[in-house]
Length: 335
Image 1: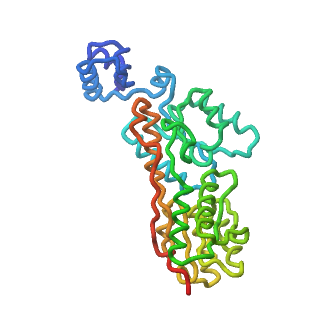
Image 2 (image 1 turned 180 degrees about the vertical axis):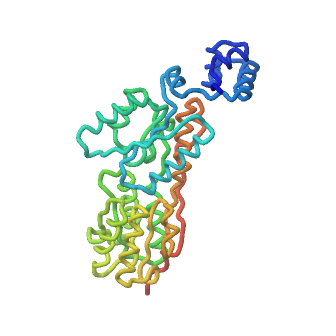
């Protein structure tokens, strides 16, 4: 049995192919009665629009591209899930494209990808969202984009943002309220905007309470679990040892916890640990990780909606709230 075609829909509906195409592509240039009649025929005969044909007709593919730098797999996976949920009842599909900011010819490769695929929208994850060359490529080629990043990074129509600096300051303030005075930090890559904001939040809280925030209490990581172990070991060798450590993402916080266990340091009895993002790993390790919840999936879904329905983008917030989730890895400072 041959598949129904757009010609069949037009004939049975008593309208032109152009009118059927307008129905398929949700054009506003139709009255409700005509739209309902065509949609009824489409449902009755089981017509499925050809995505390549739709792309030719509209000048764009039904693709949402997610661009990431591969540094924070937990966050990237959560964002992809948010995109999938947003496009679940639509004709859109997800394509994921990693970018290496340090690679020669990165911008040229990105432009080639955008020109070839012509995505309907591009979601820029941290830290790609801070790369002006990527934003410039999207603008030059005419791809709608939304950045997931810091407050004020772009106009609200192109932004889903969080105040990481303030949330980090509040997380460290929570440790200080528990009696901790010697608090270390596992910072992130220098090129990662969110990591820098979270480190600034740590420094703000420590300065507000006139606590030591010298270089001995700061260890660098690259967002990975392994770098968290290495940084944790460095901080736990400092004398006097920190009674609490704040890591700028959960993967590194889990690494710090591993380093503490290997040294026989009780968590939270001798050491409190806090992460950031509330990735799935946070609730699965032992003890479960106190962390700052970041609604990555919700932000990604909102970003997709802004790209698919730009006329309604102004109805969605650009700013999303962060919340400290207290679990078993934090407690009062040891006496």
